[in-house]
Structures are given as C-alpha cells and as structure tokens.
Amino acid sequence: IKEEMGDALKSYGKDPLNHARKMVNPSLGSYRFRIGDYRVIFDIEGDEIIVLRVGHRKEIYRS
Image (cartoon, rainbow, N blue to C red; front, side):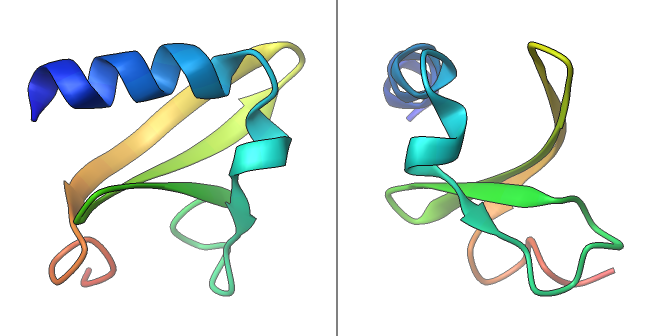
C-alpha cells in the first residue's frame, strides 16, 4: 500500500487539481485524493501540496 500511495502521489503531483475532489467540509482540508480504499486530505500552497491526513476511507473523516 505504501508503494502504491507513493506512486500515485508522484503522478497526482504533476496536476493535483485534475485528480482531486474538493472537500465538502473544508475544516479537515481543501481537497482529497482517492487511492484505493485510502484517502489523502491536503491543501495547496503555491506550487506545493501540503498533506494533512492519510487514512482508510472509513476512518479519515472522523475527528
């Protein structure tokens, strides 16, 4: 899973908004990626992706 996530993030990093979904609840972060059953919640600052949370889809949205 770790390798799959790393490969996906490298690919998504080239054009992150093309692969991302806007978060309904922006208190967790502005955007999310789906990588299998896992989610990566992140913000974008300039040309950098700031990863805020990574977790299984059943757990990631719980505070």
